[in-house]
Every structure is written in structure tokens, then in C-alpha cells.
Amino acid sequence: MDFDLPEELRELQETVRRLAKDKVRPRAREIDETGEYPEDIFALFKDAGLLGLCIPEEYGGAGAGILGLTIAIEEVAKYSNTAALMLLLTRLPTGPVMIAGSEEQKKRYLPGIADGAARSAFGLSEPEAGSDVVGMRTRATPDPDNPGGWILSGTKCWMSGVSQADWYTVFAKTGDPASRRHDSITAFIIDRSAPGVSVGSLDRKMGVRGVDTGELLLSEVRVPAENVIGEVGGFALAMLGLNSMRPIVAARGIGLAEGALMYATEYVKGRSGFGGKMSDFQGIQWEIAKMAVEIEAARLLTYRAAWLADQGKFTREWVPYLSMAKYHATEVAVKASGLAVQLLGAAGYMKDHPTELWYRDARQLTIVEGTSQVQLGLIARGVLEHHLWWD
Picture (cartoon, one colour):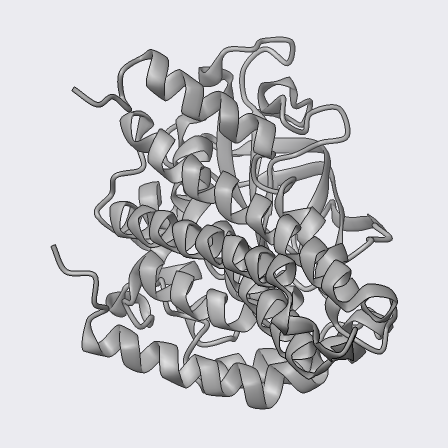
């Protein structure tokens, strides 16, 4: 058993760490306050070759896998979860294509993501179907004028990067709209330029501002047969895609937690009170220690989950291990950001410090791509079905 990162991943970690400190950290507050998409950060990631980390080399990527992307996102998320989300969006919409897409789809859509020529977004949730995914109402009906093609109508919501995307991975009902069977749902690639595609209202978010989140409106959008991802009725693809994403979302959590704890620790080391430094008090030391333990536990869970996902181990029997990483790391982010605010006291509540920004951003992580409660349900099912067992 070797806990050391391979040399190429250590070099990636060091490179992204310097880039995040020098370029992302100074921009984090401005991105949050303006809510404007940081094209300069996107260009920075493009020039550094970070947009294709998880994309195989044969499609123009770096071939660093999910673990490579996880490591990069952890470093960026120490200062900006918006910037970390930009990197995450190189994998969330492309995941289904890489898992089940045709060779033609991979050659057509993956290189543009890897070299920054295109951006994409992922459409699964709907106003009446958030965690209850099979309750979606977006409908796909056979196109009578295009054999094998489909006509899609419906609304997707809470889509990160919806305004910036050039194409979308979208799930729709190809079977009975009222059906709750998994084989009634299919994945499609939809080009932004297709007639009937438009961006609806944009959300006013509490945090992670700078990457638009909002609605994708589909009005009788014609999708050719070659844009069906995998098989018709292949809803399992949505779950496989999300399962493989768990460590990547978890990385946003551990990065945020690390950034918050490091900042708060340096603050209390320099803050005088009651005749000494605040860091001299055992009560404060213990809180720092407990949080450090939780961060390291989250990191171990996350790196293992990324390692498993890179081996293709994101099917049902591996779900508990993947969900543990997402659940624990994002909950730790909430705890760490809360502790950072508390350690700074009144100062931590003010915009003079980044602690209140971390506090707002952290809340998103326990909701997106499967809430903490959904993850607990998946972990529990894994134990009940002995996929996670100890004898």
C-alpha cells in the first residue's frame, strides 16, 4: 500500500497550488461580488492545460483521470469554489459521453472541452424533480421526420454553467411520462445552437457566484439519433455519471475546509487577547485539532474514491465508498467554514475577511449532485445489501 502520489500528480499538485495562490486567490472576492463569469480564470486554466485533466489523451486531454482533477480542484477550492466549479464542469457533462458515448461523440465533443474551445453543462434536475430524478417531466418523443431521432420539450433547472455552455448533456423521458421505471429515461447531447434551445431565468445564488446557474428551456428541439448517449432507456448512465463525480465534488469540500482552517489558524496566531495570543488557549487549539482530523479523514476518503472511480469502480457495489467521500467532505466544509467564522469572531462575519465567503459557498456543496441525505441513504443501502461489510 502506497499513500504517496505518483510523481506526475505531485507535480500537478504543486503547479496548481502556485497558480491558485498567485492568480485565483486575488480574484476570489471580486468574482463573488460582481457575479461575473471570470473569463481570465478560464483562460488561465486553459493555458495551464487544466481543462482536459480527466479527458483521455486520445481525445486531446491530459489523461490524469478523476484523481488528477480531484487534486487540482482541491487546490483551487482553497480560495474560490467558483473557480473550482469551472474545473468540475469539464467532467460532469462529459462523464456520460466518456462512459457510454460513441466513438464519434467522443471525437466530436471531448477535444473542445480539453482545449477550451467549448464548454458544456449537465441537465438532470427539474422544478418538480430534484432528488426525485425519475419524476422528471422533460419529454422525448420519436421524430417522425428523422428515423431514430427525437423531439425534446421541457425545462431543466439549477444547471451550473448554463449560460456559458456550447452543448448540454440532458436526460429526458423516452417512455411513458408518468412512468417511474428507470428504462423510461435516456441521455442526449444537445447543441446550444439547435432551434428551440434557450436559457431561461438565472438563479440569484447565496454563494458560488460567477458561474451562472439557471434554467434550460427546450421547445420541440430536434435531436438526431447520433446524439443519443448510450442506449435508449439507459437511465443507469445518469447514476454512473454522478457516482463517478462524488470524489470531484468532495474535492471542492476538502479544499474549502483547508482554506478556511488555514486562514483562521493564522488569524488566531496573530490575535492578542486576555494577556496572550488566542492560539495559546487550549479550547481554540482543540477546535483546530478536531477540524484537522476531519479534513485528513475526508482527504483519505476522497482520494480513495477517486482511485476507485479511475478504475471504473463506480457501479452499485462501490457506491457506499464514493458517497462516503462526498458526504463527509462536504459536511466538513460546512463545519470548517463555520469554525473559521467563529474563530475570527465579529471580524469573521465581515467582508474584510474571506471567511463569510467560504461560509456561504460551503452550503451549496451539501446539496448539489445528491444531497447529504441522499448520500446517507446510498451508504445505508450499501450496508444493508452487504456491499459495505466487514467480515
